[in-house]
Amino acid sequence: MSTSVKSHQGITTRQLAKVAILSALAFVVMMIEFPLPIAPPFYKLDFSEVIVLMGGFALGPVYAVIIEALKILLNVLFTGSQTAFVGEFANFVMGFAFVFPAAMYYQYNKTKKGALLGMVFGTVILAVVSAFVNGFIMLPMYSALYHMPMETIVAMGSAIFPAVTNVFTFCLFCVVPFNIVKGVLVSLITYLAYKHVSPLLHS
Image 1 (tube, helix red, strand yellow):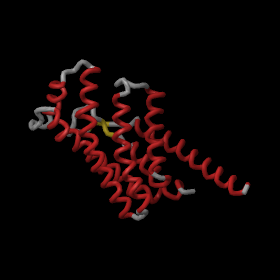
Image 2 (cartoon, helix red, strand yellow; image 1 turned 120 degrees about the vertical axis):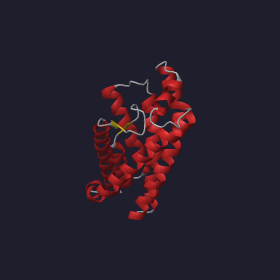
Image 3 (tube, rainbow, N blue to C red; image 1 turned 90 degrees about the horizontal axis):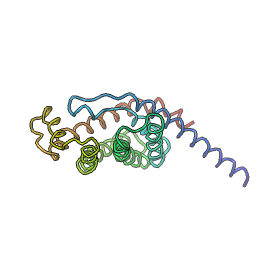
Image 4 (spheres, rainbow, N blue to C red; image 1 turned 90 degrees about the vertical axis):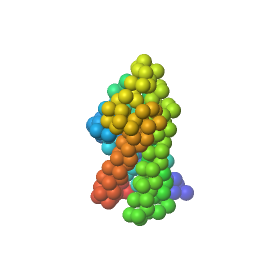
């Protein structure tokens, strides 16, 4: 009985240590961000979800969500929030929308094909969720927070894609493609790197 308890506690300790390390690493990677030409410059791409997704593949989908949350918490603690937590909330929701379904699918299909399909599902869900989160929450809150008329935000999208004429087309032509590109790039890096990192995550 005592051996079983010690073994269980040891596994729990290792999992907590891995979560802490992956969260810290994801936070560091999150600091390296850059815009894409297909969206206004306040949308910035970072590759922290690569770390979160690897954690989800190795430890399970619940741990992916925990790592995602801790990553954002560390970012707030060390850098503060420039968006009254609107950006952090959106980052968590969209990170969750991507990594949780991908890690959940992989948990029941632990093959290369399972990983690929999981990341495809995650990317599709990310694209859909990002449109709703931006259209109904993030953009209106940004508009109110910075006293920026919604028309000004839409005009920033129109400068990139003339077809952007309202919030709906802004999300359709700017937000959705941005997140699809993010999902594809994160998935590609994760797919290429995971087999090399996996032995460390499972040790």
